[in-house]
Image 1 (cartoon, rainbow over the protein chains, first blue to last red):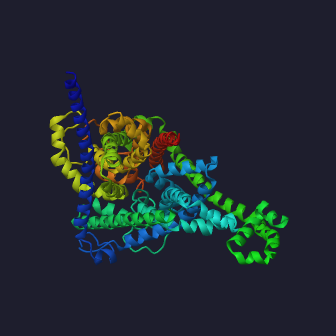
Image 2: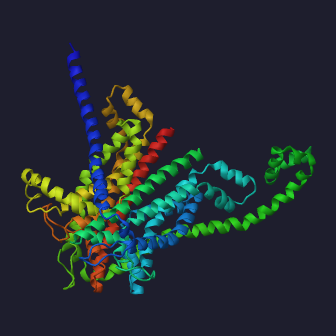
Image 3: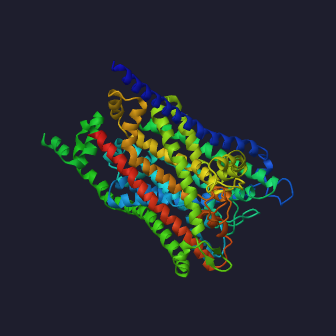
Length: 287
Length: 351
């Protein structure tokens, strides 16, 4: 007698269970739509101008066919190099400090600051660099753009370095200390060596991330239609060029914007794939 | 005998002693045992300057991060000061933005930033949590890795590429196939003609796509921190899969999920390029979500390089300061929440 309402209830619960699980599945499928749409559009429309001209020529004047973004590619690479020079010493040694200091109050404060810094909008970093570098120099420059990118890289690389150093097995460090090596030598030549591949991957991921930054470059490095000759003059970058061309009314420029986007996408996907492979290998070694 | 036990008791001799144990030959000579004591001293003497120097070098670089964060805050405040003094509270209460007349009211930009982020927040929250549930609890094991990889890529795609896609694909699509239905079904005051796709609503949608990976990555981590036994307990009591998820997985991780969502919100507030390209760039406060609008980040991106008067620059810097203040507060709150849940759960697991 009683079994009827129970099974009714059970059927209802079962139905809810099925519906909600289906909704979760549909949501996961849904998010794939914009992802694939974006990747397909960028690939198809980007391939239209994905030729040698794009990589070796300067942008052509309006109305003239052809031209490329060679100067922008060089500019982006220059600024990434400048950013790495500024940020890598700070972030790798800072990361070493955090990993060794453990849970002291100061280390926690630095860790927290780095996390908060990574949440600061990149455009705000642009304003900061404008005030401290562009305004005194009275000129937009690759140096300023590189500095802005460096500030964005620092929190990323610091935290990655710390995490990866912590992954290095303790007995490796103990072994070195037991052989009589001082701590600093152990850290530099044993621990950092062991974490080398992982840290390199982290740096690469950070580089790929800042290579795609546009907002802080808009008023630090600005743009330039010609080859960069000095780091103290306005310099084109791939992202700013994509932005400028994308909002332009000219078909040829829009096509090139898509090609620029394709180059950025290849960079991002390539680095992500590479990091997956390296980090997996590294983790296998640590175990 | 006293000679052989002595080095074991004194720690400095152990390096030499253990080397002897590993290899039999040096031990037979007998002499190294006596030599270990004086030999182990010199490296110890070196340690006394090498380690402190190395430590203080790394300390300086770690402190540089603090100094940098402080410098950003101070510099921004300093450059916003003329506008803060000149405009006072009017900056937040009026919407007249006229660089020629040196009249700066930022309300329209603040409105655009908040509303577009709120739309993104409302769309991305259910999706982010639903997909992380799918990935941690429901999906077959072989599917989890590739799907997480795809979402990782979604997080890494540059903002300007999203913007490009937004202008040429999303905006036309929305204005032709989506906005008319919103106008017909929901209508005024939130959805009204005309719509060309460049609007607050489109900006919200593109932001939702962009912050989804952030929300997902963190909520997934929070879910994974929940011990297996909690799920098994719920299942053993006769709960269905979904009831197990609600009772044993989602409800204990609520603060962590809130943290995840707020981190996403923080990212949405500061997002610049994609929004600049799709929001329409018109400083307008209107309930109509299909009207073009402007946001703090987009006005800075549009006007900063061309701003000539000091007051204009200062007003833009004040907008940047507001943006930084909001995002930092949200970030701190979010991190505290994520941190408190995951440490609590870890403690639970150990108990």
